[in-house]
Length: 493
Image 1 (cartoon, rainbow, N blue to C red):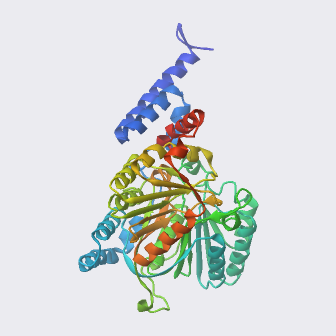
Image 2 (cartoon, rainbow, N blue to C red):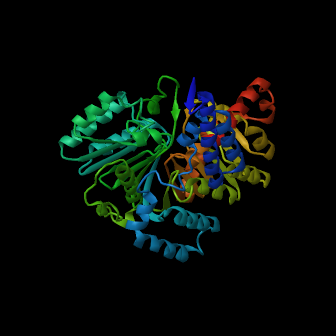
Image 3 (cartoon, rainbow, N blue to C red):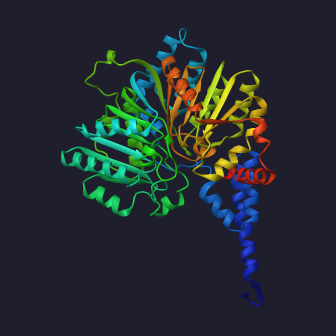
């Protein structure tokens, strides 16, 4: 086919080639201005030029640096600063007052979290830790049945299976009792798990249902790669849940693919519940939801329990997303690993770290610190599982101990350092969670919490196979090549 321009003719192939070059050059300038790490920039530029139009679409879909722009209108950390400014001012007073008593690494971590994500330091908290779905859902559903004023739920995945249906019946009953019920699901995570019929039944029961970056509209479809990976439940503003568990049968019994599901989730009462309430409300507003008298949710709320009856448990709630000012959870992980003195315990289903985290782990191990990494040994997604294995040789050489959990699927996300600083939540130890997804983690500065997670790590090791240098050498060359090909794509995530 030819296109005529006066007396000359230009083939459609030539026009397409010129258009491809113009687009590739324009996006190359954008990539250079974003100052991505060299490996990532080179990978993207090669993709743009070697895959005409497809590479450009892939970059626009998942490679744009949203720190220079903005996906959502209201970030939780901004709300913390706007509505909780007096409390933020108190944090510096707290640090100054407790400076002499606190470990220096704790002080540094508190400071960093405060200034990179407006993470308030709350000290009056009660926290229950759940290491199984059965314990968590029993407690959560009991709390939901007792709700009197409001139920706010936010999940990456909501399955309308047996567990989802049980939750639906609870929510429908609470609506009939006059309780305000809101449910927020991620557009990508729940795309194929919450059916149109399930959504309709929830809405007909009176549940307000919203989708974060809904793929059915143009903007949501364009930004679907930037998922809301948070899992939050807030009941009456006084009880809050967060962690790694979504709504689905697999979190109870492993589902159809696994014999068991190992995960970690938290139940809060006390001051931190207001911060999780704030996180939900910010995400709800960003998804088109309406909230009357928003300011009433942004004060540390009064409860029926006197403040002194809560345990003295310093904690911070850290939010992070692709358009956050700082990648605060990634900064948190790097900082506490780099500042560790004795032990580093890491649990994550996936392990595709950025160069900074990888170097911090190797440096800690080479310094004589006991560094242990535990990840899923039975994968639900093969590409990140294969990519993770390419990091093993240098980590093992540095002295990092690596454990693959084979007692079912492993979904826990924990970093615990020196039996003193512990963080857990929705963030995996991978570049997607660090830079592309909206995540929320809790950070604790407490020896009791440190021992709780260290003890559980030891129990989990009983269900693991240790990866050693000798065992890794048995991996065949074709499999090593497959793993390396998968790793190439990690900077493009």
